[in-house]
Structure formats: C-alpha cells, structure tokens
Image 1 (cartoon, rainbow, N blue to C red):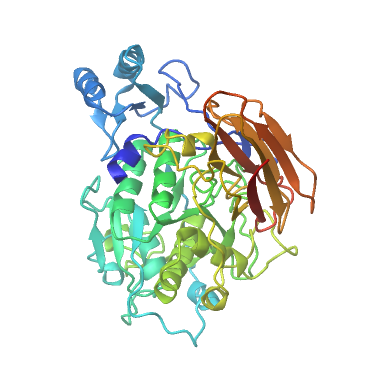
Image 2 (image 1 turned 45 degrees about the horizontal axis):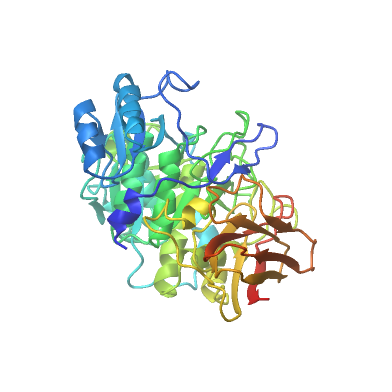
Length: 533
C-alpha cells in the first residue's frame, strides 16, 4: 500500500471530547464518529477562518473541487480547504455523489507559551535533564518542528532546513526558533545549548496556524527524514483533520510530542493535539520541580519537563522582552517543555536505533522520575523526563498493529484497505499486545470465520485489566451494541464465543478495551487467544 493511498482514505479516528473544566479528563465517548458539520450548522462556524471538507479521493471529487474553488490541503488526497461561503455548496455537491467523508471549521491553533519574565535567571533547564557524564551521539535523530519558521541565521539553530512545502519561508515570529533552540541549540560557545546539541531541524513554517495548515505541516514532516515531531501549539476546539494527520504521522513511524497547554488558570480545558492517543503530552515544571501555575492538568498528560524561565535563542528582531537585544532570553510555557522531551527523544533514538515510536514513548514514560504523589498524577504525568534512565532501561515490548483504535482503523476506511485478518478460523492463534485508557484506549482486530464454524476468543490478562467485546463484521463503529462482551474484573480471563450460522464465511471484530482512566497504570498487557470449537 502506498502512502498516498493511505492518506487518501484516512478519514476516521478517535474523537476526543473535552470534559468539564473542573475535571479536565478526555472522554472516549465515540470511537468512530466522523464530523459532518456544515457552515451555519455549528457554534464555531462564524469564528472559522475557512472550512475543511474531506472527500473520497478520485477524479470525480477533484472535478467538483475545481468547480467550487476548493484547494487540496498539501498532499493529503481528499482533503480540501475553501472559504466558508463556498463550503456548504461544495459539501452538498459531494454528498449528492456519495463522495462526502467529513466537514468541519478550519480552526486556529495557538502557541503554547506564556512569555518570559524580564528578570531572566541563570540557565537551568538542561542541567536537570542531561548529566555531566552523558556524551551526545554523533548522529542525533532529526527533529521536525511545525511552528513559526526556524531562523537558520541564528547561530544556535543554523542547522535548520526548511521543509519543501513549508507554508512560508519568512520568519514571522521568534517562537519556532526558541522552540528549536531548546531541543537542539548548538554547543558553539554562544547563545544557549539544546538538550541534543546540533540535532538536525526540519522546519515547517506556519503562516496562519489554521488547522488545515498545521495538518499540512504534520504531513510534510511525516514524509521527511524527521523521526521526532514537536508540536508546541494547540487548540481547545478539537479539529478532526488534525487528528487524522497526527494518526498518520504515528502510523508512518514518527514519534509525536506535544505541549499539554497553558490553560490551568483559564478553566483547564483539554488541549489538542496533546490529548490524542499515542501522542506524548508534556507539562511544565519550575526550578523546584513543581508544576507551574499555568501548565494544564488532565488525564492525557504523560511527562513533565522544565517549562518555566527556560533559556532560549531568538532572532534579534524578536528579542525585545528582556530589554537586551542579544539573541538570548528566557521563556515560560509548555511550548518549551515539549522540545526538552523532543531533544531527549532525538538523543534516545540515535543511541537506541531500530525501535518503533510506541517503544520510544514507553521508554520515556516508564523511566520518568516520579514527582508529586506516588505514581502517575494529572499535574506531572509519570514524572520528569529522565534521559539517563531511558538510555539504560530494558526495551519495551512491541504493541503490534498500531494504530488500531477503532473499527474505522481496520475496516479499510482509515488506511486505504482493510487490515489483514489476524485469524481465519484455522489453527489456534495467540497474540500479545496492550491497551491504555488514554494513550491506546482500544485495540480492534479483524477475524474471519468459515461457515457453520464455532470459535472462542479468550483474553488472558497480564498487567492491568482489560475487557473483551465482539462485533459483527458489518459494524461501522464501536458505538453499536456488541454481539457479546466479557468484563470479569482484574486477574480473571475474559471469554466470548461466536457461531457463524451463515452459509458462507463471515467477518467479525474483536475489541480489547482498556481499563478506566482512574486506574492509570502504564498499560494493560494481555494475551488474546483464538481457538476453534
């Protein structure tokens, strides 16, 4: 399968719904819902900068797009952007031809930064993360940054290259350069030193920070050589296209790291893309290793990193806040905690090559230095990112077939063609995997049963506790009632039985559902066994 085909059909993913401000808990209430909001039909329509409409890729859709003046979003076939005034007619024309896949407002994302205080203190952030006995690898993994264009004329970020299809080639603000310097500022005796000094930077420069433009940047980075993607921006209004782009980047092998947000004192809403499954969400701590007054708290938070008065390099034109235009300043915000982890990830990937993005993410979660209350907590996640620990820890197990978080991920809707059957009713088969309430809430597998065949599916728990469900092969999402389910509690095996009474082979979906958010173990490991009866 080509990546073009994959992107052309990537039209469904988990929809994360924001909880009330007091709880700040993403709720996985709908696993396979695709938005079909149209101009004038939603509360956010008037505030939208434009509209995003997804079509079934092909010549008919492209012809209709030309008629309505819709523009393709990057190289994501089937995704179009156009002004609000023309969006409804375009969507209705697609719907008439059964080509409409999704529609939503093109929302704006904002950088996850507060601004530095004028009395900037001594540099401290890097010393919290990189011990004096650690030697950087010779060839660090490239880091992609979707943000303001990184200024390569700044000595600390002179290694930055511009992505081929960057939305702009002009440095419109200093935020992107500051972010890049935290992750990869050169050890050149001037300015600041990044976590992974001199790591290659691939910069996608944003012009408007709209959802469609950010998604285009994520797509561009996923197509590049970058193995780490830093997203120091976010929105409290979930954007479906953004979720699709993030899922695709993970699918194609990119470790995605995002700022958790600075909205703690503004109602503490959920911030995306940090809250999406499989994304490493990073909150900010201060020099006392305490959560900062601004860092958002929620159940999606994975790690903490320095994000208060962090030393950064800036283009001189934007170094205006501390009263000294010397290209060095300090900044506050989870915008600068995220690139600390991105720098660690670049170092880790170079030192331990050959693992998948999920394994690198697990290494960073499992080795974090616990802060606050014992174990995971909503303010610091699993704790302060620990480079030395991640370099030495045992290799985590591979979680196979990810992402497979809903039926639309495996039935051909999301990735161009259906996922292979994990079992076809023959010899007994077992597979090992894991789920997590936030990072990997559900694993869905396709099986096919010959006519008149009976089968038993058994979930053998390892760590944690997961539940088992069985769906008919004609189901379009996990929101429908399952054919069978088993929820026997911690330590007990869950079992479902199925009988194909049809005169021909039939497909089914087996779903393994994570424990509730309240348990927040690292993950729930399991063996899934398929046997004939």
